[in-house]
Length: 280
Image (cartoon, rainbow, N blue to C red; front, side):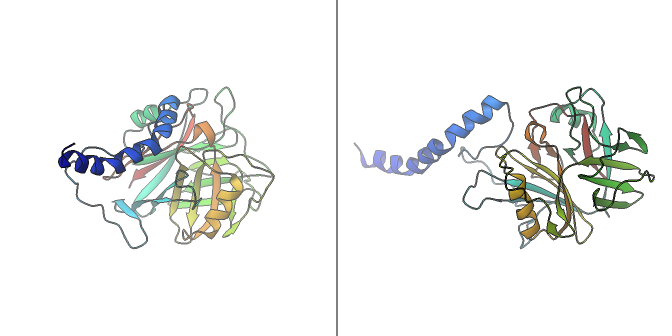
């Protein structure tokens, strides 16, 4: 064969090897109908301007809104935790609830046209009715969780992620709220350590850091156990004070539609409750 042929083949070999490694996961993604991106080499294209990245690895999507990807399992790069960090000085939050009629990511995106981001929130029953309390624009639905879980709440400009075990809800006025379980971090410490719970699943989280910023998180296609997630969040550099596990598995959904590095983690199930982020 001509020398040019062997040289070209040598340049193609790394790409062929990469395709062999990722092809099984492409099949899984297509089978599940997920829109997650798989890093398959593509034909060279014009390189876009780089996103602003600080020394900690955060990518600025808009003033007061950043994203970063973590690997909670260092030996397994397929498990990725997507984190969106939101400054309340630039953004506010609203809960949205459709009792009995959930939507997927596309449906919620088309409904919440002004939202910069959203995640799924409460657990729900087979009739798509929320488990726990939902407060949307001051209107309360459902019953508060008792003796377990936590709550994200907004009153005026004050945002909180709080434990319902340490601080039960007693009916005080709320403008926005969603509830779920369990708490993963409470007062800076890992608060879920049930090692008998070995269920590996996709996860969704809302948390608050020591600067008062709100963090929305979701794993991509492959998740982890709640104990792993609790330990990772408490030991990470995120400076988390409180973190609440939201509905996961087929409900996990995270959308960010601003900046040049958007996020579309699609749920496999229609969900009736989302927590949405809006510019001030």
